[in-house]
Length: 114
Image (cartoon, rainbow, N blue to C red; front, side):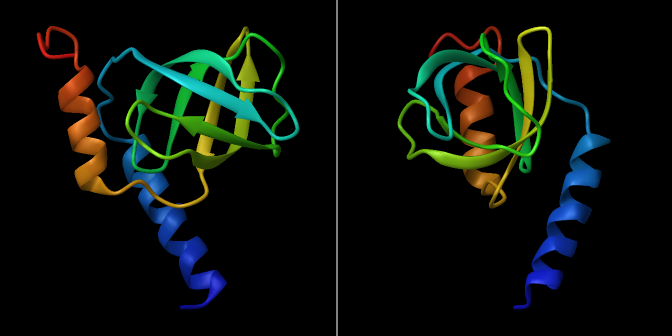
């Protein structure tokens, strides 16, 4: 598959996801900017294509970062925006729909098993 085709699929999925209703969640995680140490964060929303999370230090759009959610390997992403100690990032590779749904089920507000 060509890079252009991959980017096209990513763009379409990202746009579809942006129009979907987002579930308010709070997932404890670690966020590491490229060249920095990992810090504790809270993921505020999660989609197939990205996430928003707290970021106590400025993260520059276009920079690479890694998100580590409980029980998962680190996920590479690119910072899209940073404002008032919150950042929005796009995953380098789309998150599996099964993994996405399992995470939301586990951490959705009111879930006693979270």
